[in-house]
Length: 307
Ligand code: CAA
Image (cartoon, rainbow, N blue to C red; front, side, top):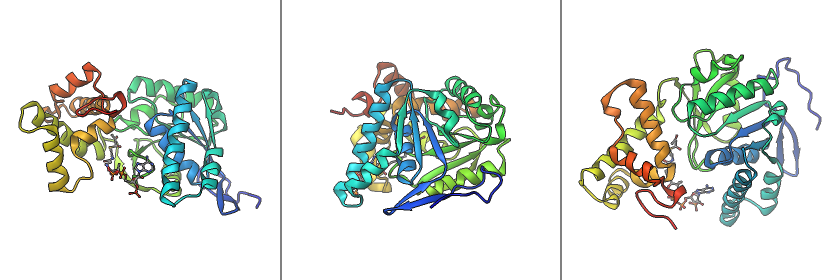
């Protein structure tokens, strides 16, 4: 089926252009910056939804690892019988791994999922603003940083917004949608439609430090670390209490390991500085673990040890 747009402004619509052998092909090309835990997850759900996706990172070994993570995740669906091996290959074929950020010129929507540092994100947004087409929308998967500040380094602040996915991206339904001060309604609507096409549930929040998810989650994790620091209970006991008593799928310390202790510390610092309120003071034990290189699951050791 041939696609012809009846809409003069291609920002507004995401269209299914081809249905072949049960596969849906979307007309918009997505680029994801970063092939780590979040970047590869976002790439996967976009490709599963039928989009062509360019997944960029600075080294080939990072994009190769990202591709491996995606394949492993898709194969879990095959094992469960919810996806066929043929679909796995179709999804993988929609992904172009690259180290060339200049491929941004081909993308309609670019989702940045790089390291959680404002100066690095600003440098990426400046570069994307230069490289991407004038119509392209820029979204950031930042978990706590100000979208308005990030948008201000571009010449298109109305086309910038926050699109915060949760980890593991293939399993978690939420996308926190953050409008910067200058984000246009058109941008919001397009990104909202994109999140829905990816099978996610978008929820709107304002541009405040930590938004909602991490403003509520991280102080809970930080408090669990204080409990450990003060010797109130062991890591296992703290996690067991929250799992059995509060029906959380994993305890706060295990979840911190899973998110990355460096990320948890960084978000607490954003909250502490952003609100200037001592209730957000990062626990010294969290800081010490990060200094020791105990970053959680990804480093093999956090509050628990991983093989
Ligand atoms: N890809 C595909 N499938 C996956 C997967 C992945 N990456 N990860 C888990 N699964 C599937 C498993 O195959 C399994 O499927 P079935 O139940 O159908 O067999 C299912 O998920 C459950 O997995 P497990 O049995 O291995 O483990 P679990 O029961 O503990 O569930 C979990 C895993 C879904 C991650 C669950 O533990 C959970 O919900 N944990 C909390 C996650 C959370 O809070 N995420 C938010 C983190 S905060 C964040 O991301 C924001 C930020 O800015 C820091």
